[in-house]
Image 1 (tube, rainbow, N blue to C red):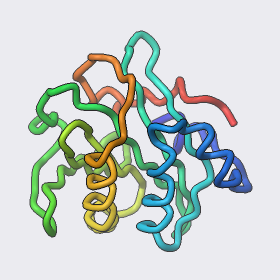
Image 2 (image 1 turned 120 degrees about the horizontal axis):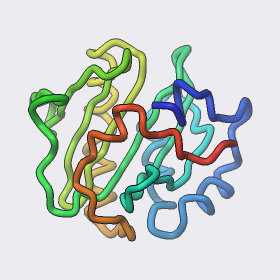
Image 3 (image 1 turned 90 degrees about the vertical axis):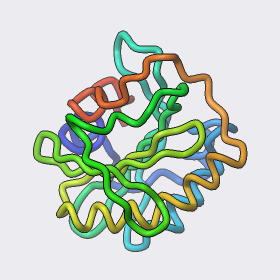
Image 4 (image 1 turned 180 degrees about the vertical axis):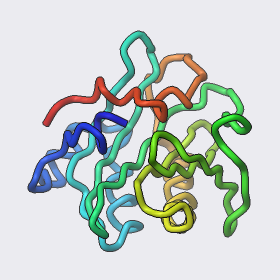
Length: 173
């Protein structure tokens, strides 16, 4: 959780949307609008693609500020693996999307699946609030991912590693 929340690696002033789209690249630039529209009261400060040292897995990372906190939205390819339900994540249905909930290192995380991706919302907001935000964001983000976003992600299937403090490798801004 170092990149977005614990390490405070985000700008005081939001980067312009064009700059964020450039950092995301053509595969993920369209996701910026979905995140902006579905997180009312939050401002997207930073967006980039990052990875964990030693892993080929790529993460699309949106860092937002609102409601007195920092909230991250993360997307990574599933590479055909099942969502890591069980130890760290507890499943539950919310709205028309299956959401998975976890409490990790003082943070609350809500996860969801699309055809080829896993998505996560991570914050220090209450578990219920984090799940409500994920419930609003997951369907349109999943639809955008399923409609054509592609990535050159690696084949490391352990997406729980990001939630255990592995964001330290995200670019410093």
